Length: 141
Image (tube, rainbow, N blue to C red):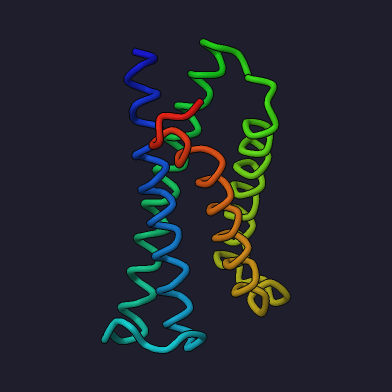
């Protein structure tokens, strides 16, 4: 069972990374921060942004459960890469929660900062990917 979980961790992490990256680019296109790449109306781009965000969240939660199972079975390896990976993942989860809270509650000070918050979330997810699933996909410890 542990081998199956370890085999799933990399591909699920890749899907999460690509979904988060896609959601970030769709939102930047919808807000006209980057030039139009996809020929779609803003409402369609925002809807795709939400669905990719949901896919990223579901994958992130699955990967988090995988990590907890691995830590329970093997213990937490005291290496800088694993520690950095864990810190970035927790920070990403907190940033995602903050972003969803700002959007759902329409917090005035936060709505003006959604783009930097979303960009920070994408950077954190890239850090999580570079310190975790990339190593798993490459077969590195």
